[in-house]
Length: 129
Image 1 (cartoon, rainbow, N blue to C red):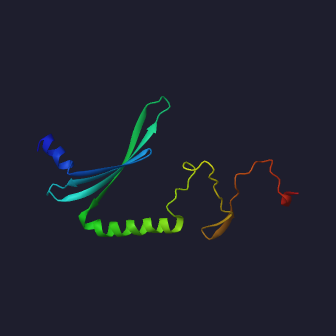
Image 2 (cartoon, helix red, strand yellow):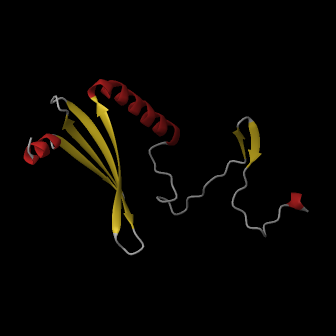
């Protein structure tokens, strides 16, 4: 098989989703037996100190025999997130006035620990006096 045949096989069907620094590539590819599968690639752009940039890529392969369960779980997970947090983006990056809430009590291996929010060492609590 020459390079043109290989390229033709790899470009069966593609879609691109650009999302800020991230780009997602959805590609239908063919196996050696000429059956189809899906690859999803996340490509993230990073800028070096000298102004040059590079990309980091992560890829997953999804085969036809897994499509039904994959779609079901993906739908369940995305529905859960929207149900619990809505579809509004909540993050430091997207909202300038974002204030992270700190959990004061959480369980870690069955024991409770206390987590302090970011306080200045000059902050005084009446319990300290």
